[in-house]
Image 1: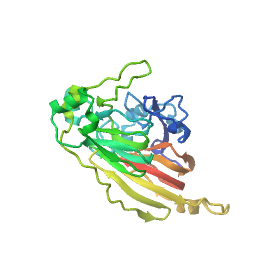
Image 2: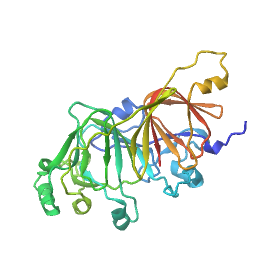
Image 3: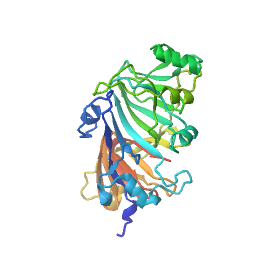
Image 4: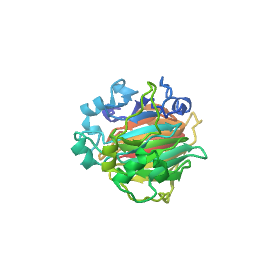
Length: 342
């Protein structure tokens, strides 16, 4: 059979980050096998120069995702917002210690003051959290730039932050301009705009491995921060929709991306006499349409992806890029996948 090789899915291999607040779970539980300790983040699907992902299977193996998408822009899809660049970045984050209190600019500010870069809106899906885990979500009262700067310089910022308890399976959308921080004991999947613009307001006076305090960016942070009082975000009503072998739910839908969770539960076949067509019919069908690529991030379990007479084993922590207008794909196993599109 003459399959279109270009439109077949392929695995991605991430870049890692050894930020001082990271832990070891991405290596021990997600089998990243990256020689970093700590391993704070893995950039699973990225064309950003600060942390590219690489192709780990198929005919493009060894190339960066950016190289492949530059050679095949049709992989991104035909939606007008796609452009010629991958607009998203997907990470796994292991916060063993508190992250810095920080803020991200929006697109308008970044284009003017950061050489045309994108701003950063981000979504967190909490994969795990310790009982005491929390995050910072804005300020607990109205403020202004001068007073906020005074609180920071006096080391009193903690008293003015809005703290939110975190549980496994929680969802948080962090708009650009929102002062925020992941707290110790949280493990999250992050889907964000393709940007690495972070302005730190406070970092607990920590020093890096060379004994230097991490840089703060007070002037820029104060320019872009929302300084009104913020309340704890409500967890959205979530609806699982069931069909044969799979349950789906929308976790996030915004102007930048859409994230669904897929709970795959198909029994492995043991009937050696079963036809190939019958086997495929027992699996979950999937494909990317011509409008957008899809990214499948396995956050638990294991299974297989079948396409074009090929079989790809998938396990917890692995990330699959599915080009727009893909071949038909069939999924089996017992696993949880995050399905991301633009």
